[in-house]
Image (cartoon, rainbow, N blue to C red; front, side, top):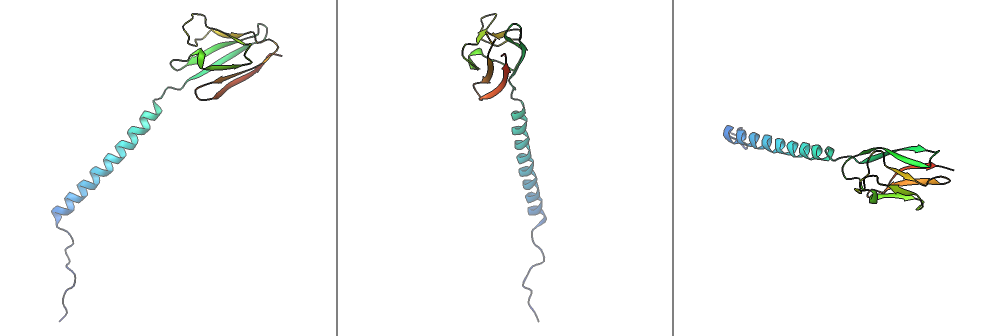
Length: 124
């Protein structure tokens, strides 16, 4: 007669149930953490500025300044002879404010924090 080498029962039903519940909880937690991280990344405010070129007056007027705390000090304007007009003297960029003394120049505007080129305008 042959001896049985293996037992047909692998795990008791109680242990199997506990293991399935533990695996389900671990997976649910992992999915929750991933989705939470994705949603917080999308909530960051995008900052951008759009300008309108006024060749006749030699100005770049701010049409829209989106996002919070857009400071004039973070804007790099080239050449340095172009001046910034902060109408209400609060240090923040608002629609209607402008860069002037642009006539005869090619003006480049860059956002300092991210080194992002916002645009180049030709006034020559």
